[in-house]
Image (cartoon, rainbow, N blue to C red; front, side, top):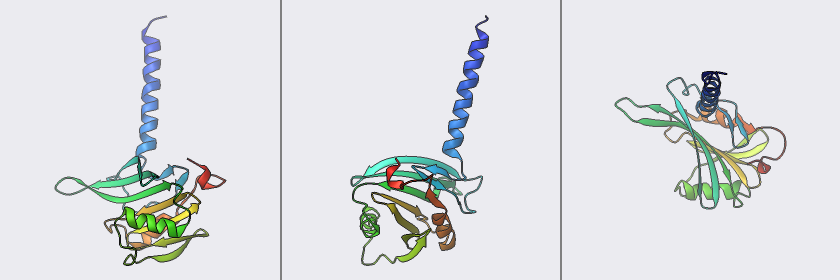
Length: 174
């Protein structure tokens, strides 16, 4: 058997795997993020928008973050939106999450104007540029429009479009 056939099959498999993996990471439509499905993206997420995933920890809380960016005129990029899944023992309820996020985002808890809203039966809070909730003990989700690009309506529509990816308790997924 000539050597070039197995090499060609191997290269085809590697290319297919690379393209499949790249599509999963860069698919601007949303998809799955750490046990949650992102089912709605605002119109500002378009073919010019790139998407990246990050994982990090802060204050004994693990973050999985998906960030959508677009190029700026004159160079550089701007963040259009972020969806973050947070996991940590300190995230016991919505009040604990609010306190944690106030510290994380360096916001004054007394001056942070937040409004309650219902997110599919889960109590949630939103401000001018963020919406967050605790779908299970030890797990939280935050949708951020840090630069006010999307507006309140799209922020909340995106937040309401994020839900558990499958049956069961979201706190049990990781």
